[in-house]
Image 1: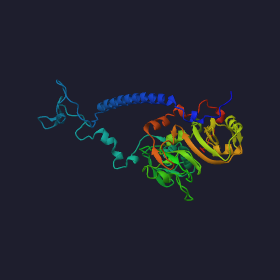
Image 2 (image 1 turned 60 degrees about the vertical axis):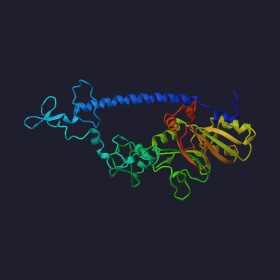
Image 3 (image 1 turned 30 degrees about the horizontal axis):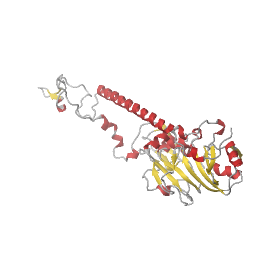
Image 4 (image 1 turned 45 degrees about the vertical axis):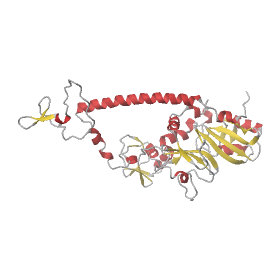
Length: 380
């Protein structure tokens, strides 16, 4: 069957019902998670009660005929001989069970977090070292693994070379001489990248970076997800959520990316079909998932959907066919577009957008994956 090479807007602007279904599924999942959390809280209260731990909670209202004391302060009384006694049994509390001077469980469990900023509070959860570094907002998980292997990370004063080494918020983790802490507040920023900005956290040559455009957005340390060339414009995501960044850049997920390419001459229908069928470059075979004329009246502008993350892949495809790329604009990344975001401006993602990204909604994943077409690397 011959593939269509026109009406690019049909797949670029198609309304996807799967996004609505996914939102409904996630809402049901959220309700179940809340129910499980409530059940877990009840179990904790029961265990605390068995251990004699007093929770810092307001007393429940007493029903008529209840055997509990109306005044909690009178739960301990004094016997005739002056020794303390239980208000009901009159017995002396067993050694170690006295409650009068015992701090509430919630207060004792938060002792190690007192006086610390919100984003530096201690977490006892164990996780791989490279994941800890990614969640601290320094870089992505793969970059963090390289830092560990290069000996640029210490844990409690000792160099660690294994990215999978288990650490928690109680450990002192230092990256390149600077201590890092787990991020408590996740930030997600969509930037409409302009030309002449480098997609990196900092540039040794002093050139302008995308971080200069979002430096007033948040006090949290964010970093770009993937890369866009200096002269490539369009959708770019920045976040401190290392786990999400790992998913969006990992080749196994094959995240959908759509570009608008402006060329030096009209693209022939034969070349457009070659892009769809695939071309062989110096680093292997590659083909577009979809392609078409953005405007049937102007064949200089092509829309192309591609999942490959190989370096400068879109430019190299057209250069291989004898075209000079005059402009390259990423109009979609996953489910994100630059709609209502002017060039050089940014906005925070909405909660729904973040949820769809985290759960890898099928509407922005490549369909009918071909195992031969999996490639590593960063985006165009």
